[in-house]
Length: 261
Image (cartoon, rainbow, N blue to C red; front, top):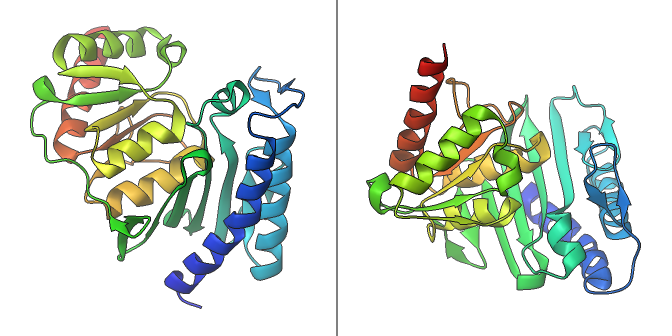
């Protein structure tokens, strides 16, 4: 089975998970708090269970790394990442900006990614070497060349609490054309789509970043960490979007890091 065929299977696996999430959307349910004080609901848990079961049925030798139920065979050659409801706070409040995401890693690198916005009816996917698409439309990052006129999306303000991240947040507000908060995968997908120029996210996990990385690369853009050259999906920070703007955001962070030494 080639990657495009696996993509088709992955899209079919997402359908029952999406239906489960939408069943609870704007309904009545309890909200629990995890150890890190982030919320989790029955929709998160049920959707991940559906996806894990489907993956095990179709790809029994593949590993799984999921947000709600941990890892199974994470050192396998092929590993799936699952975030059943990215943006649970939005989901809980009835805001339509939450997402469901899966990615396939080959030897640790994303080769397939799907970001679905269930409440908005949008599904974006990318396969290595085949491009990025949403609802039949080819995705391309923006062509904006200067931060001064850029539309910058950022994660929630609380994510920028560290001194270095606060400095970056303040400088972006001073230098960018406009800075707005677009939460979680929604902001990343808007950068991948090119309707914003870059998404700046200082706090997320492998299941958040894996699909974003392959999608933005296939949309002609760049995934990078705030510092360093590895572009790791496990490092915990990300600048995603137009390569020129990504570079300029990283330059601000790098300048402050040098001053702090």
